[in-house]
Length: 247
Image (cartoon, rainbow, N blue to C red):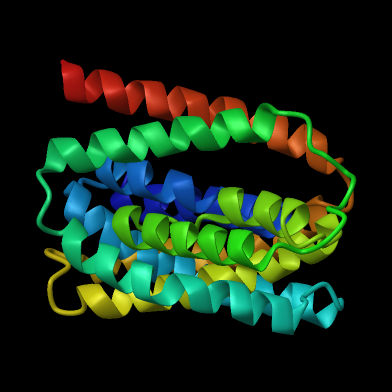
């Protein structure tokens, strides 16, 4: 199978997950780029940021059109993560490939376990600004360090800390992801290694189209079912990456 076909298929899967769940899909982008398309871990995380930024911005437009983005809350949450995303993005390129791969696998496994946990539908009694700032900063650091959007962290934080409804949290998380990804990408400008645009461009295009389909898919399948399916896929990917590092 040609690299172009693989890039298109992988991009479509990432976009579907991102559009349907408001995050999580980008966690698949890095392993797909490494194991299916031959990128180094450093180049894969940088390429992932390009893909995530473009795809999240597209999905953000779709959710904003439906009124599911709380702009003020999302902007404040994202602002807390800009500096951590920039600093972590600058530091990630200096890490050994094995360390970067191991860290990514651990985060993917944690994301999967978080998706499998029953969600708390009750909003908090009051918003905790310190908690919101801490969550935003942590999300920014993860985005910059590993090249993932971090929607799997943003959505529960927006629900549990800031009291948004699930649909609002999914839409607003895309604003946070877009801002953090741009900050991390800026830090990596000129130092991303071998960025093969002949692969990144079709991957990104397929992901953007997939995000539109993902939004429609979310209306037909319950969010809980989608999360469970995706969580098991993430666990398998995380296990594969850890075994690859150890062996």
